Amino acid sequence: MLFGIIPSAPLGAVSRVYHLKSRLDWGEPALTIIDVRERSEFQFSHILGAINMPTPEMVERVRAALELDRDIYLYSHTDEDTAAAAAQLRQAGFRNVSEIQGGLPAWKAMGYPVERGFVQVA
Image (cartoon, rainbow, N blue to C red; front, side, top):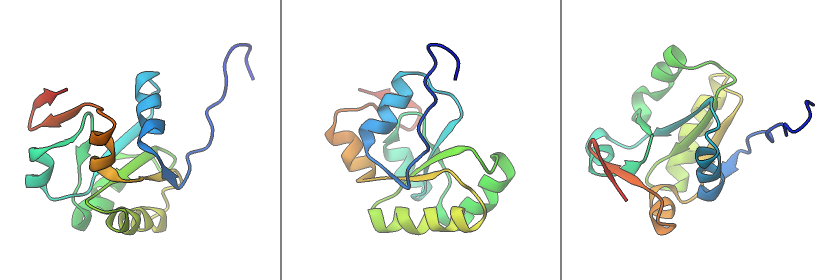
């Protein structure tokens, strides 16, 4: 370990919204936030910085775009939908997949920023 640099902890299978927000606030690179809901729902409202990859096409798109050791945060309507999407990525060989507990409602409940379409909303 280099002096003054603390290695980041391994990504857990489930993360609370404040863990993700903390990483974003610190400007930690090498993470991707994926919203697995339908595009129309994503356009209505999503976590600031998230990309949309609906579940039916997610694995194929993630394989084409990301490394297997990339930190990936997933969310959907429900924790069950998120867990199912995460299981698909883990089965495809992705090692650092974390389910955002409570998804977008939990993110909004904390007052964290969301986007609507291409406009940021505080």
